[in-house]
Amino acid sequence: EIVLTQSPGTLSLSPGERATLSCGASQSITSNYLAWYQQKPGQSPRLLIYGASNRATAIPDRFSGRGSGTDFTLTISRLEPEDFAVYYCQQYGDSPYTFGQGTKLDFK
Amino acid sequence: QVHLQESGPGLVKPSETLSLTCTVSGGSIGTFYWSWIRQPPGKGLEWIGYVYYTGTTNYTSSLKGRVSISVDTTKNQFSLQLSSVTAADTAVYYCAREPKTRYLYGSVSYAFDFWGQGTMVTVSS
Image 1: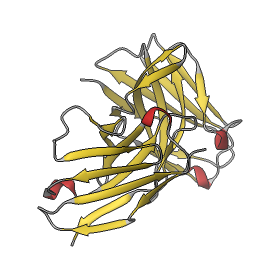
Image 2 (image 1 turned 135 degrees about the horizontal axis):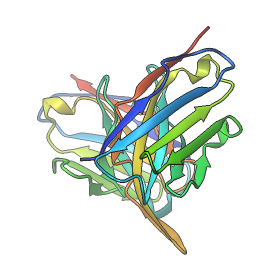
Image 3 (image 1 turned 135 degrees about the vertical axis):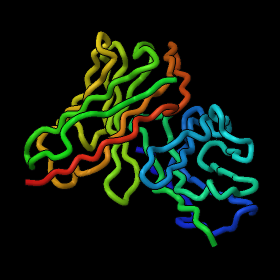
């Protein structure tokens, strides 16, 4: 099973700042099938990025993903108040699909 | 707009079977993969398994032997059964859609693009 490790565990920033979240895989991810999700309290996850770098429908362009193989990043260029949430990476190239443990983005 | 809705008992006794259904509206259940994912209180996400509209399934190894996912295309529903539950199975259970096409030498997938709102299941006597 592919283990995904996200860092940092918590990221404390202010609106307007740039956020960079990392996701490392224990082995290369097939077809770079790496997704990023945002989850707010009491809500289901929302797909932000699929295929490492493709924005999902209706996702603002301040969200961007990049990476390949075992190292991936999610960047939020200028944080809006609604972006403070927990972010998960997920690989769906090999079974079993696996998720990272999450990065909490909170207000500084 | 596609909508997924989980339904089922919120309380299950230890050693019994957890049964949930996900109803898909606003679109066909055909040609997609349908997954169950769970999230224990305050913790991260765990993929349980998926079913294709043809009935093909795939499960995470840690739950194999206890889990079964089935599909009913006539009702646009798919279901989860998890047997011999313990307190460790207490979680919010989500259903989700994965657009995926398989080819002879691979597949093309777009991750989980639609999710249900989730349903909390507590295992307790």
